[in-house]
Image 1 (tube, helix red, strand yellow):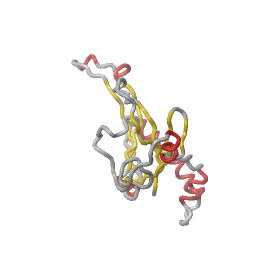
Image 2 (cartoon, one colour):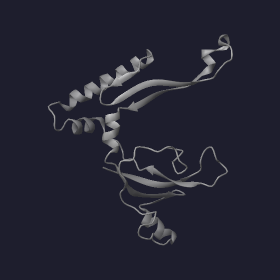
Image 3 (cartoon, one colour):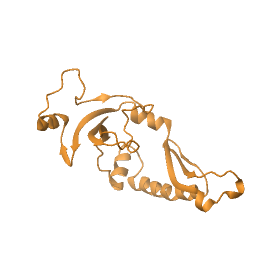
Length: 180
């Protein structure tokens, strides 16, 4: 499976005085409609697309109900949904005010290890272009040509095509995209 990426120049939000750096960001495709998704997912099964659609709707109703009751929801083969939030601290317990000290509640999804592995194991990346100052170049080669830059030397950096293959995330090095 190959994922298209685009290079975008961004400033690090915590280092606003540093010069902007080029980061790879996913060149995301439009998602399938629910009907197309259920048809594609059930194509080699005895499950009717309408049955899968109904099951997904039931799950979408069930998960918020369970999360609002304080439960973690584990969907087998998919992953776990849970509520997380930030909180201010107090020195004395009697000073804690739930109305003002609990902030930023959100739903966190953690994919199942097997699902994550199946997705990432055969992953590779392909040149999806460059976005600079509102101009969208179709590829790194087109960008180089438009800017009058020389073609990369064989074996050098900046090439296109499949790279990666099985990386499962980094340790947060300086080259990592701080903006997602």
